[in-house]
Length: 564
Image (tube, rainbow, N blue to C red; front, side, top):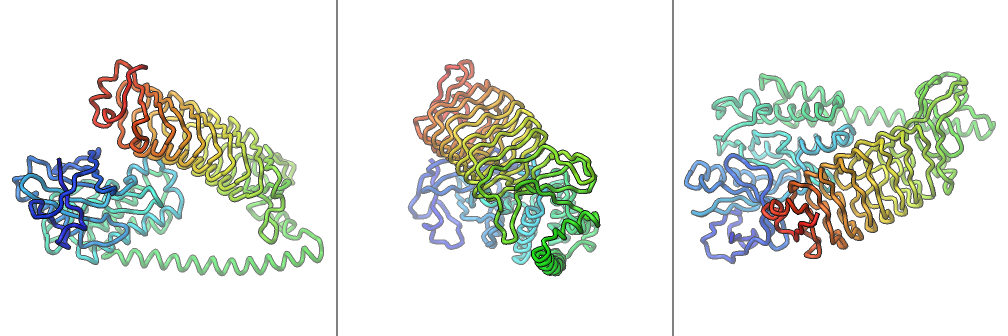
C-alpha cells in the first residue's frame, strides 16, 4: 500500500517530503489511473481524507535516472513559486528510493481541446472568449513575473473547471527558469521557432506568447467561427517568427485589450445617453399626442431591425421585405414589466408585413422569455428551426414544452432552471443536444431522447431530482460528465450497445438507482461514474461479455451480473 504524508503534517514548509522521515503516514483512500500518460510519468487521482489530489508519478524504470528525478524536483520547485487562481497548485513532492511523485490540486473539468470537441458552440460567445483569454493571460503573466516560462502551453495543458469554466494552466514539466536552464522537450505545433534545438540561451517570455497565438488559432479553427478583430490582431503579432516582432510581455497584450475596451465602453455610454434622451422625448410625445411616433419613423425611414408586436410576443425583421423573422421576447412596458404576464406564450408561424409579404417565423432568440416569471405555457409552432440560449430559462410556471419536428437546433441551457417543467418533448429532427439543456428542472419526470443523438453533453439533466424515466436512442455513444448528477429518483436506466464512453460523475448521487442495463459488448471507457451510489447498484451486462467487464480496471469494482 502506498503511503502519503498530507501537506499539513509535513514539517517542511516547502512541501518536500522524504517518506522515510518520522511522520504519521496515511494510506491512500482511493487510487485510480488517469487516461493520459506521459513519456516519463504515470498520472493518478488519489483521495486522502476526503480530498482528491492529482498524482504525477515517475515511471519505475526511471527511478535510477538522476536526470528525471531532477526534472521532478524542478517542476515542483517552480510550481510552488506560483500562486494564481488560474494555475494548478502544487502541494507536495514525495521522493525516496522506491518512488517519486508530485501531488497537485485535482482540477475537476476538461482540457481546452476536450471542451472544443464536445461544445464548440461555447466558444462562439464573446463573453466566453473574453473570460478564457483574460484568465489565460493573467496566468501566464503571473508565471513570467515569477521568472518562470511554461514552455509547453497548448490546449491539452489548459483546463476549464467544471464549476464556472475558469482557466487552470497545468503541467510545468517543460518549464524554464533562470535557476533551471534546462528543459526536456517541446510540443511541435505550439513550440516557438526559437525552441528548436538547444534553447537555453534563447528562450524567454516570447516563447509563451507565441504559444498563446497558437492557442487562439486553435480555438478559432475548432469552433468554426472567426475570432473578434481584437484577438485577430493579437494572434497575428503573437505568431511572428522573429521573437523581436512579437509582444515582449503579457502586459502589452492586456493593455491593448483594456484600451480597446475603454474606447468601446465610452462609445456605448455616449450612445446610451443619446438613446435614453431620445426615448424619453418620444415617450413624452407619444403620451401627450397619442401618436405612435417611433413606429412611424421606423417604417417611414426604413430603419433596421424592425420590431413588430403581435399580442404579447415581439418579432424582429432584418428588412421590410424579409422572408424570415425571429421571436425576440415579450412586450415590455416602459417601466420594465411584461404587460402580459400570466398569459400563454403564443408564437405565430408567420406574419404579414406592412408591404403585404408574408414572413416565416423561424427562430427564437437568446433569452427571449428568460425569467418570464408568470408565463404558464408556450405554444411553439411548426416552422421554428432553432431555440436560443436560455430562451425559456427561469420560467418557473411553464409545465410543458412541446417542440415541433421543424426544430433542428437548441442552444445551451434553453430549458434550464424551470421549476415546474414536467413534460419536455424533443423531436427526432434534432441531431445534437446542447450543454446544460434542461438542468435543474426538479419537476421533470421523464425524457425521451431523439433518434440519432450520439452524445449527451455536460450536465444536461443534472439536478433533475424527480426524473424517473430516461429513454436513450440506439445511436448513443457518449455520456459526458455529470449528465444525470443528482437525479435522485431515477430507479434504473438502459444504456444501448453503442455506448463507448461514460464520463466522471455521470450518475453521481442518483440515490435510487439500483439497476443499469448496459448492452455494450465491450466495456465502455469509464472512470468514477457510479461511485457515490453505493453497493445497492447492479450493472447488468451481456452474458458473453461478463468476463471482459470483470477484468476491466473500473468496471470490475462494481456489482456485475451477466444476464443480458
